[in-house]
Image (cartoon, rainbow, N blue to C red; front, side, top):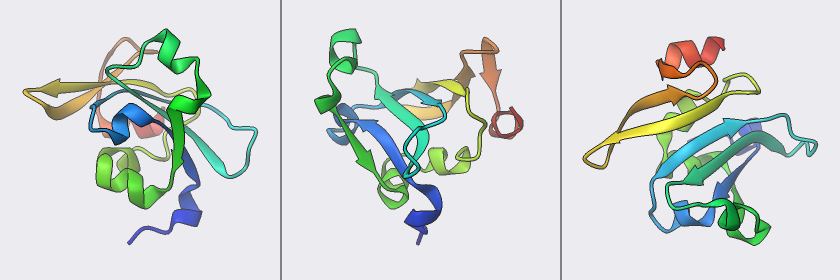
Length: 112
């Protein structure tokens, strides 16, 4: 069981809650101490969808772990991390770093 208080809240597209795969995750410093800076977008989210705050919700670590345990593995990545989630036949296979413009391992993500 995860200690939700140790992680804070994740901002998540409601499309992800409906089963749409995560396509992007990025971490930015939050001005709200209860949020950890992680934001998750689905592969269906376009600019219009993203512009509406009602299309997002805040989830705790336990809920995120059920949806995407990989995010708990990369939780400590530095602010500024910007990742594209790669899939093959619906299975998550890794990450592409949008800042470094290349595939990246979890170990590399954590060291920034």
